[in-house]
Amino acid sequence: MSIPEPVTTAVAFVVALGVLVFVHELGHFLTAKRVGVKVLRFSIGFGPVFWRRKRGETEYALSAVPLGGYVKMLGEDADGDEPVSEADRPRAFSAQGPLRRAAIIFAGPATNFVFAFAVYALVFVLVGAAVPSNEPRIGGVSPSTAAERAGLKMGDRVLSIDGTPVASWESLAKTVRSSEGRMLHLAVDRDGARLELDVTPEMHDLPNLDATSVERAYLIGIEPWREWETVGVGEGVWLAAQQTGGAALTVLRGIGLMLTGHVSMKELGGPIAIAQAAGQQARNGFWNFVMMLAFLSINLGVLNLLPIPALDGGHLALISIEGAIGRPLKPRALELAQQVGVLLLVSLMVFVFYNDIHRLIQG
Image (cartoon, rainbow, N blue to C red):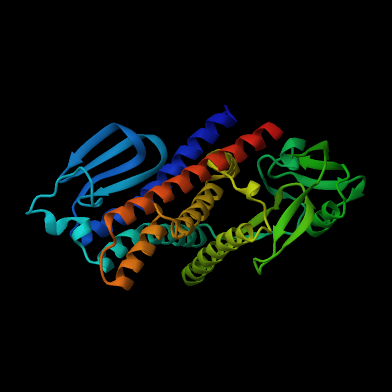
């Protein structure tokens, strides 16, 4: 019996988010412990705690809102409610020098990159490298795209378009791009059965490598089929490093294109979009889901390093200012920066939720 798609999507989303948050917060936690800072709580999720267990001096918790997590350290907030005894004062976060505090903060995003690299290396060494095939076979269908609405599935082999035989992926892509938005009639082979499907290509923006411009093209939202090729350990590790660096650059280019207005902010996706992608990749296979986890981990690492107050990058920026002026920033200035950062993040969250819901309504 097949698992219903909503169930697969929900489970994949919870697993993906849980793993990524755990990895990120684990970086903060382990580094804080390493430099001697007392960690009061390690929480997956925000808000009211529904499960907790204390081991040693740290409380481990699961909280009600699963969209993130946090590591609470002693003396992390200058005006926090947690009293700091004289005996514990050397172990307070606020008592540490700029370099130690920066190391704790940077460890979260850094662990996301290390996790992604380890996942890519593991997949390449154990399974092999996924090399795009030139056969006209669909290796993936993106959610909420023309291909998904038309009923195309991963594994479908396109036999013809408007009665013209399709011999290669290159020919398939060229026909779609030159369609000018005209509806195409596809004959596909699905597990030995011939199906007739109609799909209407839609205009999309494709970022160029220079991150300063985009190319507009008609697409239907499909990926080429990939064949797994075995590689050695050394090559697998090298490919993992390339994949990690390339993915990070891709995320940075996307941010740059949005900031320069070459790509609309409407392209931003939120939790619903992530859930859809997680469910799709889970249905595509275990290793596809694992590779998606690695890419999302890189996204999380890059975004957290942006110099926005309330993000890790914002904290690092404030520590840099402190180092430059040679004294701690005033509590009022830190509080104001945090408030601005929280306001920006809440506004962004509302915006991406709106994008997600709008895409769902538009089908």
